[in-house]
View 1 (cartoon, rainbow, N blue to C red):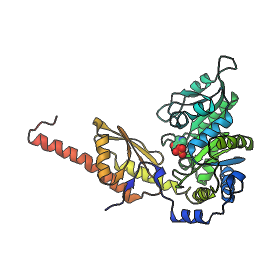
View 2 (cartoon, rainbow, N blue to C red):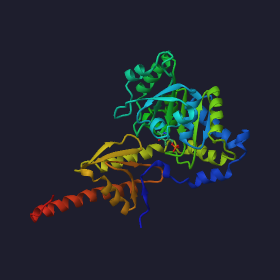
View 3 (cartoon, helix red, strand yellow):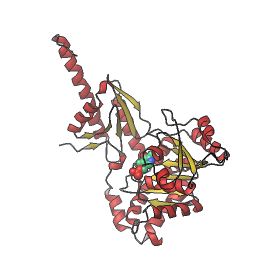
Length: 360
Ligand SMILES: *Cc1c(COP(=O)(O)O)cnc(C)c1O
């Protein structure tokens, strides 16, 4: 029996043996007293790697974004955000519900960009009628799309010129960095270049980096002090969390440069799926491959893959995510299974045509 090829998300990874060893060996303390050496080491490492004064370890990316938004904005303030952004659409409305922060969602194009003119037009003047526009929130990668550095620079400069702060939901920051790496640069260098346009950044360790749990919010010392208070309120003050921070630190030290392997496997999958009638590869720029399946056959394709131990998500548009627990063999099996699914179709309709049977 072939092992399962789980392409539902990069969150499904298991900690490697070396990561588990690092967790077991981690010196621990009570982080609510601030004396867990492994948490402190991680926070210092991620802050300095990304060019910030301070960082705070968080149980999830959702809590990290919430703490970031609430550290920037108070009751009656407003943040500008994409209509399909994670912080707006996929976090239970936390900024509004828990922070009394008004979202100002804006349309995004297929690559996730809000038009700069739309952002400018959404910034409210100082007038008693309006919420106070305080923050622009971007996401990188967005749906697997890396944001061009020019766009980040322009959007951030424009927001700052209006007195706004800029937050990045960088759950997959290091995938964006991998796509942005220039000759002679490391992934960490490229990540720092992206972060230079932001006042705060949230990164996940539990996605492509392969840690079991955890995110970090990075920013100035003053911002992180405010976020610390919110994290406590949100129930995110953890005790011997160094056992988790050690996994994240191990990932930062050992799993950044290997993200290129995930991107190469996404390309391998995208190429393997090209040229099929009934399936169109829509995008495959980092570790996420989106395909459109014609004639409402997406669910049937997913079910057929599942029978063969291959897992993906979606309906009309299917999503396949590569990560450190899939290799070339799993990707090749996926390509063969998808091609076989459509070949069977072609044979069935060919046979029907040959016998004159109806193909309706
Ligand atoms: C995964 C993700 C988050 C955080 O998710 P958690 O499951 O709370 O860790 C935030 N933003 C984006 C874009 C994400 O993909």
